[in-house]
Image (tube, rainbow, N blue to C red; front, side, top):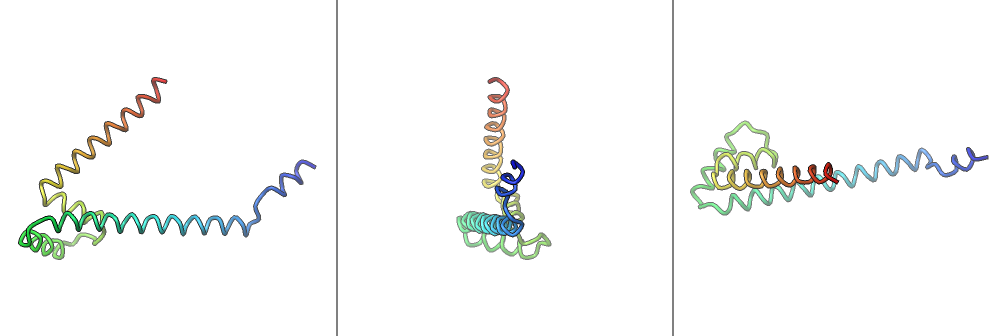
Length: 109
């Protein structure tokens, strides 16, 4: 009797498939939006440079054998523009400190 009620509450295989497909579509959309925002952020940094600096970096990027993804482009900029590297290191340090504080709070409660 209880097993029948539990069986009725379970989603059908088709329903589960639809749910998985929907979540994959949402995740893919979120990933694409994030990638687009990172490309925009990197281009904003690039366009903050002088025309000559920008031309030089773009030429180096185009000659490089790095994969043409936003992650590699951001890293390329960080390695070639000192102020970007400093900012990235400060953000990483702040993020790490926040993470450590969160862990300490978990274990001191």
